[in-house]
Amino acid sequence: SAMITAAAQGATSTMLAVTENAVDVRRLLQAMNAAIHATARSKFVMTCFASIFDPATRTLYYGNAGHNFAYHYDAANRKLTALVVRGNRLGDLVTSDYEVRELTVQPGDGIFWYTDGVIECENLHGEEFGEKRFRELVQRNATLSAEQALEGILRECHGFYGGVPQKDDLTLVLAKVV
Image (spheres, rainbow, N blue to C red):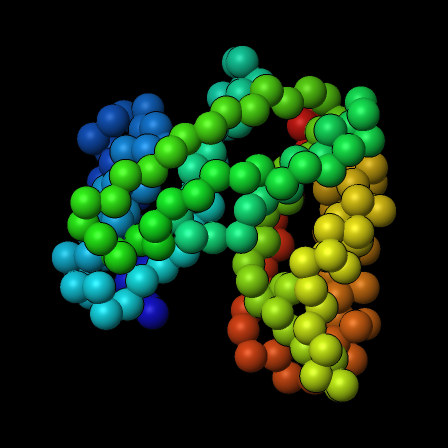
């Protein structure tokens, strides 16, 4: 997995340098896909939900390579919505293309990205945390500051897991629009 991550990071760095930091999501995912495919020859793949935010227009551009959908919290309507967009995992097919969608965000909105380890980790009884429980937890914490929301979500996740050694990483990234 370190080799795959290095290929993805190298492709990202190259795209940023070649485009002078003006990379778009589709080209970024295509470059990462090509690098991973060339490195692993479809034996290893990687999932990725890629996002680029344009602060001038308050637009989030996003694409997906087989990863969990990120969530958008619309503060004005107090509504949580999955950012649904699909695409092949990075490294699956050299010819993969990626759909890009866009979302205009407003002050107070939040974006929540996470890995499958958060929802697939189990408690002492072998029960997974699950997508529904996670979605409800994000909704309950979405109005808090980014730091408070992150702390609240992780505290409840770890409480559920009850000290059981986890099989996967637990990664949660969130951004609040100001």
